[in-house]
Each structure stands twice: as structure tokens, then as C-alpha cells.
Amino acid sequence: MELRLEEEIIEKFNKQPEDHEKSAEKQDHESIRPTIEVTEESDSIDRKPPAISAALILLNNFVLSISFSIVIPTSDTYVKALGGSEVLSGLIIGLPMITALVTLYPMLLLSNPKSANGFTFYKRPYLCSCVTAILGHILYSLAFKAKSIALLLVSRIILGVACVMYLYHKKFMSDRILVGAKYRTFMSTLNIIMQTAGIAIGPFLGGLMAKASSHSHNTIWNQYTSGNWLLAIFWFVLLLVSSIFYYDADYTIPPVPPRSKTPHSNPETETTHRRPDLASILKISVSGFIAFSCFFTMEAYQASIPIYTNYLYKYSPFQSGNFLALACLIDIPFLLFFSFLSRWVEDRKLTLIGILITLISVSVHLIVSRLHKEYLQLYFTLFSLIFFGTSIAFSPLVSLLTKQLHPDHHLLASVVIQISIAIADTVGPVFGGAIRVISSLGFLATLLALNALTAFFMLCIWKTAKVKIG
Image (tube, rainbow, N blue to C red):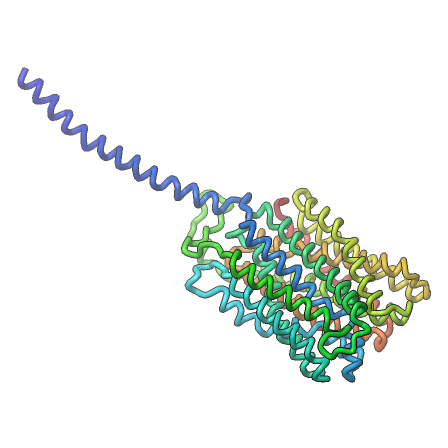
């Protein structure tokens, strides 16, 4: 009896450590589970960006596009009033993007420090864009009183620092840490819609303010400066709002590594191959060329319209501003429709559709120009189609690259795209402003050749550009 009791005690004693060990394992498993769930959630393709921050990013894009395009209707007459030429008016429009290109690297150092562990501080360039935009608009307005083209150029150069924010608009909408793959194309298209709306409102607002203050003899507030004073106020309000309500993601959490396509892949091989291969370089290069072609065509047309419509139809700055605004506003519902289509249509197909629309529209414009049949309604329709085609062709590009490239190369792709846009936004308005010098034939033939080359390059990467829909 004593022996049996002793055996039971020993057995119970031996079982307790086992139970304790199992309990400890269970506790460890429970403590790890939330981390796993957070990791899975943070790497989810359904992840949505923070609503307030995303809304402020879109609002910044909208107001910045207004700032960039508000001078289009009046730049020609403003420069002439200060003793300049039509070509210089094109430079006034595109000059901010030169500054954006030069200040791109310092801004990247500010927004992507090594201590951030792969995260991007969007608030830093955001606030910087607000401050420099305010200063740029004030100096632009004071240039008339100073009778100085130099001050006019300096004001647009300073505004160019704010235009660096265009990179962060696109990067935010395709940031894998903030936006799941399912929503990247939709958010990128929404970003383009806000940019299109800003480009539409800008010329309209510039022409409207010019007409409203056309009889003013005040050297501070007149037809050339009133719109810029108004935008300086808008930017000041946006600076206050964003300072209070905008917030960045928590950079103390390490970024989630991309999911492997094969379940038994070696993680070491995924992290060691950091340089892009030849296929990735080709995709980035072609995407950069497509971005250049789209924005060059768009900006060249926009800069040429005040000059060309004045030559063909005797349009005033107010009328040319309405012409631009109405065309852009008509395109917005169709862009919104295509943003919803992105859930069912591949990114590469959307891009090709946009390129073909642009190519066909420029071809038709060239034909009617040679036949001297540039009726107002036809010219307006063709410009609307060209603006729509270039917007559709560009909108999925960054999203397409982020779905195909290694996360280490996402920033490189965004920078290449932004450099292409900056060059196009600089050269395009100068080219458009010189339409009377190079003739409409040279203008349209150049755009036709450029877009034909774009279609050819897109077909070259067609097979490798296939990704999952969404």
C-alpha cells in the first residue's frame, strides 16, 4: 500500500513539470499569435491607407495642380507686359519642374532617412510644399510691381520645390506599407483624377480672376496677379490643416517583407539580390518613357492652346482658360469610370488603351490641320481625347511597377517616373509655347512620332507586364 502510494506521488510529481511546460508553450503561442496576425494584416492585399492622410495627400495634389496651371491663360500676356516673348511664356509654365528635378535628391534624404527603416516621412515634404508654394505665389504677384521678369522666374523656381511633392503623391498611393495591392491601381487613378481636376480648375480660375480684375490699375492686385494671391491664401489654410491633422505611419514597426511566391523559397536569396535584373531595368525604363510621352504631350497641348486659340478663334485668356477647364472636367467622369474598371482590367491593358487613344487623336488632328478644317468643336473634342488618353496611359504605371518589382526597387521606379515627368513638364510647355515658331505641322508630327514610339515600347514589354488584376 505504501509502495503504491509512493508510485502515485512520483508519477504526479513527474507530470507537473510536463503540464507546466505545456502551459508555458501555450502562453508563448498566445503571445506570438497577435504578432503573426498583425504581420499578416500589415501584409494584406486588402489594406486601405489611413483615410485622413490619404485625403490630405489628394487635396495637396489638387491644389498643387491648380498652382502649376493657373498661370497658363495669362502667362503669355503677363510675360509680354514685362517685355518677354511667347517662348518665354512656355518656360514660365514649365520652369517649376526643373527645380523639382534639382531638389528631388535632398528631399529624398529628408523624407527617407536611414533611421526610418524603410518608411517614408510624407509629412516633411508635405509641409515644405505648402511653405514654398505660399512664397512662390507671393513673389509671382509682386513681379508686376517690380517690373521684373527675373523675379517672375524666381517665383516659379521656388514653386518648383513644392512640385517635388508630385513624387510623394504617387509614392503614397502605391506604398506597400500603406496600401494593399488590391487598391493601388484604384488609388493611383484617383490621384490622377485629382490632378486632372486641379489642371482643369487652374486655367479656369486664372482666366476668371483675370477677367474679374481686368479693369484694375493696381500694381499689386490685377489680372495677372489676383489668382496667385488667392492661391497663397489657399496654401496657408492647407498648411494649418495638414500641420494638425496629417500623421505618418508608425515608423517604429519594421516594414513587412514581401510574401514569397514559393512556400519553400530561401529567404536569404530574396534579400541578397538587391540590384534590379535586366527585365526590371527594361520595365522601369519603358515606364519612364511612357510617363515622359504622356506628360510631354499633355503639357505641350496645354501651353499651346492660349496661343493657338487666339490665332484661330481670337480667344481671350478667359476663354482659353474655360476651354482647358471644360475639356478636363468632361474627362473626369470617364477617368473615374476607368478607375473602377481597374479591378477587372489589367494595368497593361489600361496603359495601352490610353496610348492608342492619344495616338489616334493626334493623327486625326494632324490630318484636319493639313486640310485646314480645325473647327472649334472638333479641336475641342480632339484635345479632350488627348488629355483623357494620356491620363489613362499614365495612371497605372507606378502601381504596375510596384506589383512586379522587388520592394527594394520601388523607390527607384518612383524616382525614374518622377524624373521623366519633370523633364516632360519642363520641355513640353516650352515646345507648346513655340507652336507658332515651329508651325502646327512640326508640332503635331513630333507628338505623333513620340506616341507611336511609346506604343512600340509598350508592346515590347507586353508579355512581361502581365500581373494579377486589382
